[in-house]
Image (tube, rainbow, N blue to C red; front, side, top):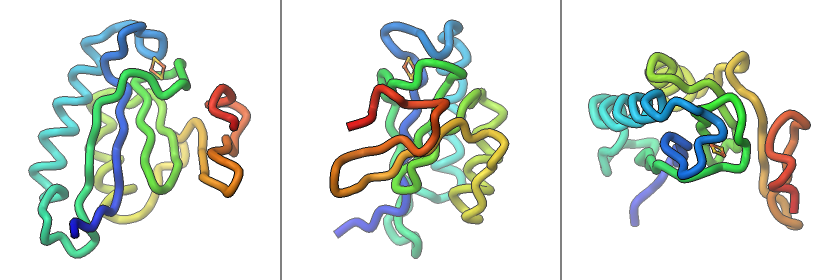
Length: 128
Ligand code: FES
């Protein structure tokens, strides 16, 4: 069975561009993410920490300060994830295990009662 270390969910080109009005910014971030995940060997099924999955999603219900990147299982939400932020996030958060706190705009965690927002500034609509 494939071991998964992280899943990167990027709101890059939503149908309603609420978090990032310029779609070219999200497109560039998505292409950079695909390129670097491949270059860093994060998709390698033999990676000792597990593979890193990536998905372009339509909307994470944050809808501000985009492009928005949600990283599971950590539940951390990065804002303003333009192309130039992808490499530092992958190197620091994913590879070294050190989230970049100044770019984090919200946090989620799963609980027995569903997903909860841990920060008031993001994701209120996801409270369950
Ligand atoms: S439109 Fe990007 S999070 Fe909602």
